[in-house]
Image (cartoon, rainbow, N blue to C red; front, top):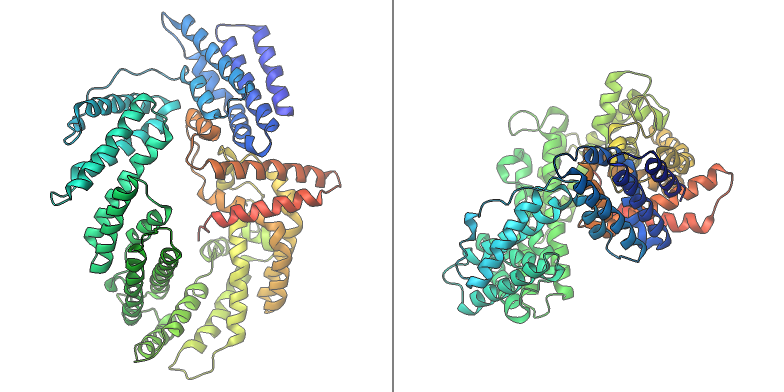
Length: 604
């Protein structure tokens, strides 16, 4: 709340000084304060408002510059309208407006340049729609073109236009052999959605209908490409049922299944080194077997049946095995389609396992287990970054800061341990597998998984929170947490993480895992920040940033979770700095961090 008080004081000071745009600048600050105050008062449900308020406060200079740029014969009136819009938005928030993005977008619109109406789009020859729907679609597309050139409305306008174009494209691309009932249903549902959006462009139900129409178009395209006749027929039947039984209502299971099938069938043989191609053929056979399960599940009347979830999981697992094989091939690759010298023995082991799995009555699980092991231990998470720092030879850096060890020492341990592990895999050497080497390398892999996430936060100078990725994260609207607070929350766990690395390097895998377990709870917040930092985009324009933070993005729930995590982590850090703790609050925070971490895939 201190930030809100400062914003109000700043607004009053600007108003007292006066000037042509003093009113607009003062109201900008009052709007930011209103977002923070009303968001805090709403508790966790107000998190997106708090994010928007802090984001607007951070980008005030950009909006002040936009206000200063208002010029021309009607500039006085335009400035007065901007001031009124901002004041109205703050008042709406105070009266309980539940959609902060609506209030913020309207408030900032006056600071954006208003474009000329664009020319008519040639797409608007809409065969199959009645004249009323065609005219409504024309108005919508013109509105979208106008919105895309106005920063506060660019994202929502672009989303509406793309959804409309995709849905119209489905109607146009329906094959001539499409049953008349389905063609009429597509046109009917599309027309109702277009008319609803012409009345209210923010109609969420109509937008969902457009997306579902587009998805069912994808189902048709996926079906036409299937080499498995049962799966092709099942996909076509599922799409027909979706139209006839429920209009354009598409289940989440069908959506997830489409996305899975669209990922393809894994790598082609020619992209793999030669010794791994027999394994690829066996794994591809497993994938084909899952198609039969998908076809059977899609044929059931209940599209949310457990059978479909099970079939989707089985296909995802089979496809994942093929992707791991692709990674293994990249690890082993030497000249041409042969493995490098260091990996020839492991490639022979994979070839032998594939031949064994191809025998009548044999199981493929040993082959899958070997591929998983090589994929996991053949190249550790963050290993390339670690080697780069070791080659640099400096006395600062992320890995040295986090582990307290020279990066070259860790690299030598990985190389020596991997060499012993590979010798045990090579069937030509006829030696027993080196289980101690495998266990040590596995412990190093577990430690490196965690270290890699946290390393994204550490700059080349060894300072926590000083990396380029961490700075991009700090500039994003989702993350409102100081690096010092994050370090305060992570400091005890960082010491345990360094000890885990030292034990793994020393060849004590059990002690390394114990130290890692001790660090796991306390380091989760830093891991989450590190993963988010690795994906943080470059700073966006101020209008889009504030609008997204106010709830205009498609990940409102995730943004609210992150906002709550940042707020309560800051509070926990403040208590720790004062020599106190709140066990219930920290336990709640740890649970939320684990949930968020599970939703963010590892960048490696």
